[in-house]
Length: 168
Image 1 (tube, rainbow, N blue to C red):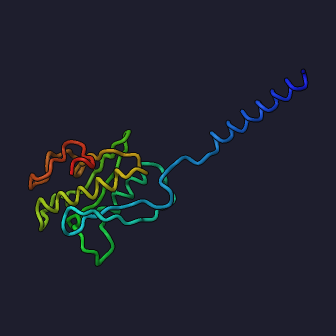
Image 2 (image 1 turned 30 degrees about the vertical axis):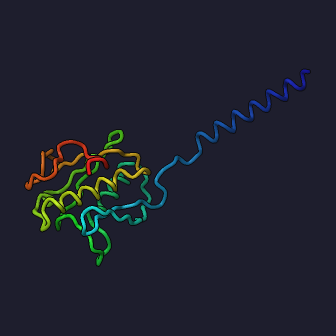
Image 3 (image 1 turned 180 degrees about the vertical axis):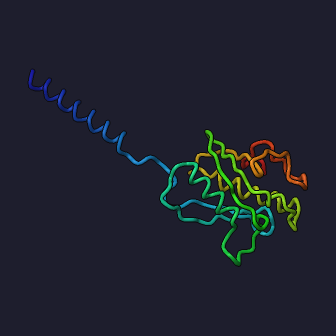
């Protein structure tokens, strides 16, 4: 009786040590080695995904910054797509809870040849890129040179509230 009790205690101890090791040494579910970046086709509504390899940084803010930068840079050359205005840069991306706060350079306010059509497509691609399931983000706030603005100069897309996939 005593021997079986001791054996049960040893098995429980080993199981507890194994569980503790697993919880402290497992790799958390993350984004992996690549992320999906979306761009809008010339029709302005169809989004096309393309995979982009990640560097060594895997913290949420770094991955979100990289994803936003790749989205603003646009798809590979020769791809017919709606692109952000020339010179637009991602200045910063802060991640708070499930929201990415993206600070874009003032070039984003430059008029696009396609007007509101392109403006909506640009932000749709950015929002879809940042709200992909692997990034665990659900909305995107936009700042221009650090300031919150109600709309871009054309006034076609309201960006003073967080944008989500359902915004488009």
